[in-house]
Image (tube, one colour):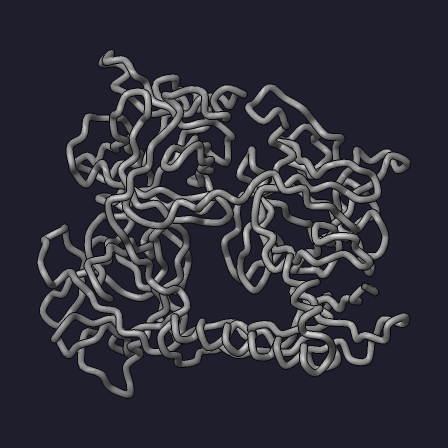
Length: 559
């Protein structure tokens, strides 16, 4: 991990985009017809959308089980199947729909449209086909350090069109493939080594429609379409393990405001703004009184708080609990025993297609909520105080002026939603609270080390201890947590010191040419000939190969 100081994010992005543009122009002028490159290669720079993905050699479509059927296999296996029809609006089985979304470092995520789970390749070599390099769908892994759910999509060698592609796992460089009928392995999808020239390594992207506009991060009220009632969660007077979610008439309170953050693809985490607790759902507990009830809880590291938002119209969505595949609903009767409680209902063709009005939810945006830049390291201070949160050997946690002895630089790691681990950049020890006492300790990931960042304005935040619900506060020349006072002593300003990044020293091996960002604000050349295709030429026309937008060298056909 390296750290570099940078200017504004916008300026950095603009500089990289401009640099890549001029490098592309230079490559075109130096190594072939720029006009031909623009005409022949500009059509696949972005593969985002909803697709059916057909294996070229078999004509079968990428699909995946939506639960574990076989005890001797890892579960949620990706397979290929013939085209499936079903009784929904467009007549096609949505398990064969995949949402392709551009992610980190030119990779794509492949999300199964019906489940909200992501294609991932197991990096395990085995003599058993059930486990050797198999592909399954998994809950979203939003960490930029993990690339097992990242895929490069490139124009296939000798492709007849822009939709003929190879799909390469970013973490291994292996090509997406699938067993055929002769192997009798359930058409299991896996990854293979190769050059991408054989038909089993090539796929055809059949676009169903554009990717729907994402629900942009912010503060929302969530309204049940059938009743007009707003989602709300009990906050209680104590910090209980669960807080049941209900619907209520509009009350304009913080309990009815939810912070929505995209995790990956079309999967989101939804946080009650006033409490910092995150929307989740009971699976199938023995107590029927809470069976499948929707609740808010402290952050859970098992991804059980992920929700798939399937857009039905401008601001209407069907909301599916990704771990269980069940759909958000709420009782509509006034029976006191039901209390308009929210729950998850079994997925059926009618409700996943948006035909059950109690299971369609309107998301109405009422405000913005900037996220703390997780690529930055900061000093933590209070406006005009001249003091900074730090740590010193022999003293422990300090609240004092800048000096050369005290460690006063902190790293914010976002775990999900707006929940952070805050650790000393020099030692990695985490800020934690035990009761009202604040100290540092070895990073454990425990609830005492989790903090909810509540934006106040500018670079100012209130830092709420996620386990106790108390806020980081100043006590004389020390630091404690206290209940919400609404005072300035609980408002903290983050002063960015440097940019934290993971340096990539080389392009992926499958990228033959072109230029890519190195992850730390610079550009690296791909391939062995300084980003170009070298001396490769069309043997008939003698026109040089050009570097395609997907970083492959392509021959310009004879006119």
